[in-house]
Length: 374
Ligand SMILES: Nc1ncnc2c1ncn2[C@@H]1O[C@H](COP(=O)(O)OP(=O)(O)OP(=O)(O)O)[C@@H](O)[C@H]1O
Ligand SMILES: [Mg+2]
Image 1 (cartoon, helix red, strand yellow):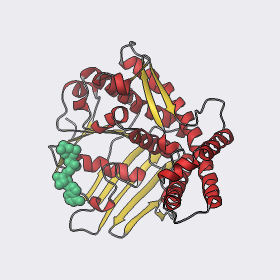
Image 2: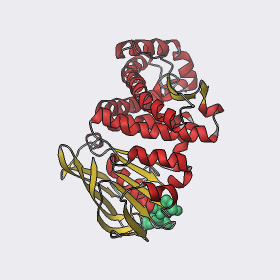
Image 3: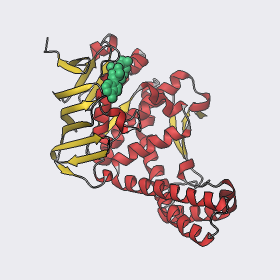
């Protein structure tokens, strides 16, 4: 899919902006603090209705303004689709094809993006929560069923944790109600666990190939979805739910003592194994980078496999973080395939040579100008 047009109004340091993008590689060049990341963030917001940098929507509204608006036209094989996100001090509203949507969940999935920023190394190096967020964001945009189940799970988990806290402090004593809440949670949890397992398997298929290639055939990458449920290829949702119910009942006393849920996919993780070793714990910086890059690139292929279309790729300041070899892999993997937005302070080296016909925009103080073909 392609983002053909983008309009911003009172978004961060952009007052009013209207721009048409090229289907291939769009390079956004600017000094520090001119609005490069803000622009990618706006595209990300148009896809997910939220920023990748902050959970506080108000921060996105230009200072001294009350309403920020991001709109755009996405071209998919099914046709052109206008999307819009409005953020005001009183909340957020979204439109698909000019119609307001009652729920944010009917909005997500129309524009698919994969964002790669230097902090994405945290996917491999960071805490498990980073990897769970990764699964939820990425799988949520490729599958509305996943999005539905994970939202339902998160709501029910909050509810159950609140109830467990009340049981802990003796404000409640009804164990039958706990059983009802737990049964519901186990149902959503079972769906999430099985979907994550299956999608990680698909992701592994693409990531292993890419990793093998980037490491010059020296390394083998495998991905392991780590869950208390021990999912495997044979396990279906009912079996996962049954297993979860058993775990909940075995751990009920412990959960009440702790006043929180100790069982469930909110505890899961992904292990990245390179040549038999967990790369998070034992990998070199370079191996961790290669793994993060392979997984991000694999997402592009997985998205195409699951949705029938390639997502947009947003690369925020990553070229400078990658050595020439990895830059070459990245650029050849996406060229002529994926609409890409690259931010950088200057386009040089391998990137300058490798990108055929980039469309170059210069960003200065919240304004964009297109460099005409030279
Ligand atoms: N709500 C807002 N209203 C107005 N300006 C804002 C708002 N939020 C952030 N800014 C400004 O936007 C500017 C540009 O930020 P951005 O992160 O896009 O820079 P950048 O071009 O990516 O720089 P770098 O190369 O350092 O990453 C910042 O200087 C910041 O002061
Ligand atoms: Mg930036």
